[in-house]
Length: 374
Image (cartoon, rainbow, N blue to C red; front, side, top):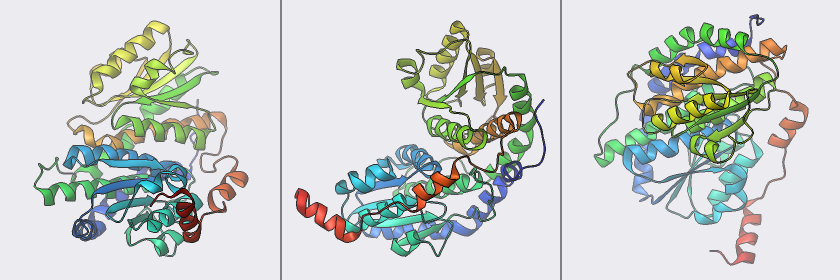
């Protein structure tokens, strides 16, 4: 059985609903003002950039923008943007730059890169005193201020909800059809944070040792899979693989054996039937599978199932489906004797994140002059 002693992470999983309520209450009017400023600038290009969980939130927003208002938002890794793709933005570009601390070196550099091109920079961070806010044109505060573990929960929810609210506001001012209301979302998150705990613990207790893990999903479930694999790295020190649902069939499926465990997030929606086909294929290969879905029938295609609340539009998947992933990482950490609140290799990881050499505005000007890209 797993050790179920108290951890900061477990408490923070239960606090996510409160974070969402705070964002809804405090930040809606700020989002409305910022969206209007962007439209006044006749924005023609939209980018979101970050690293780790921040990037995964941006990947969710990529789908929200497309579905809510038909706007192509590009979610780009911080380094890929700050050293290469920054040349594709201009004075009508809007660049969302995400970092919980606001001091992540590569993300601060991405903001500098965007400013060097005349783009409007919107910082999403918890710290008003951060380097990121000092560079940005606008600040959307991340309200997960009480998060203390190193395995992000509420801060991911807050970043996602801010970006979704931007998509909602763009849809509203453009006259596009609005999505179902998110007003009851905190309650659903709170209920799931309570109800998913024991089912996930039982699954972790039942799994054999010596497994390899792959986490997969399509559409909104793909960034959820990215997030889920990151929690396994961070909390449980498990080197999990991650793949987009369709890509898994083309690549990661080849080394699957009966010692493989594949975690599939499969909300009812556009990629659901493909998830069913993949789950059936895994059964044929003798692999273990864990299905996370709002459709109870999906569990019939998997070795184990975790239920998401029914009746929610697929676009709410990121807020709900991350919760079983969080518990999965927590209980694997406890089973393995890991400290779920302390990410491994911080003595190398943290300096690489915060103290990396960065390009300045002058460096960008020199680089553009050298390449001839205006």
